[in-house]
Image 1: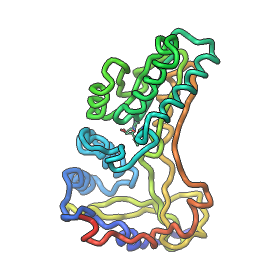
Image 2 (image 1 turned 180 degrees about the horizontal axis):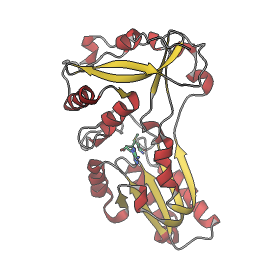
Image 3 (image 1 turned 45 degrees about the horizontal axis):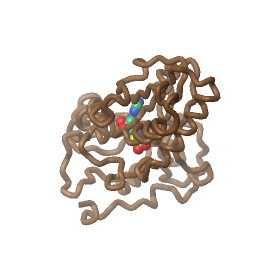
Length: 282
Ligand SMILES: C[S@@+](CC[C@H](N)C(=O)[O-])C[C@H]1O[C@@H](n2cnc3c(N)ncnc32)[C@H](O)[C@@H]1O
């Protein structure tokens, strides 16, 4: 089948760049632009990885910003109070008892962000059962150095902060991860001219823009023109190191999403998005 080029105007209208009120290009934007101008357009997932996880300029590396909290950019179940951590601690306690109350039990939390969930879980473990508290070793795993500093300062000697799951080995324990899977970089796909295209980010004269390439995607093509959807993150690279930590473990992944019918509803076409007016953007 011959591949037609994608009409990117829907994306350009819905998500123009730059989006800041002042029209300024950020340091990170400049860095990504110059990389693209040197080596060529990048998949959206690579752009997202840099935007979120550049070690100094990425969204999650802004150690002082109130990113995840009631006063921040978004909230999680942890932001609204300690009851979520309390429930998880009780689940972990049941698992510990069901497995013969081992004298060492490792809890590994990837994506602990500011350590609030770790604090809530540990507080509940301390008040629930002194033997369980004695057995518990709590590890938080965070690849960003700036976030590791925040975690070390907040959690002190209650936890061990590690940069990669490869630093941990345990006979028995549990992994707890809240809203981490949905923060992993994803590719984006656009249906245009009745074909799927992978969305790329390009740059010209220091300004980022959309580009595309043919996508080899097993999705039906009966969606409206301009439909945009996420592809899966690189779960293999993320999960493989975690899978080597424990001999035996309970894995608790908490995340939210839409069911298939809602996610692929034609009303979710990007034609329906409107970009904020310059006044709203400030
Ligand atoms: C949405 S926040 C998590 C929110 C937090 N767990 C809570 O309940 O409030 C996503 C976090 O995942 C972290 N993260 C992203 N990739 C990661 C990885 N490969 N390993 C561990 N943490 C990661 C980010 O640095 C960020 O702190």
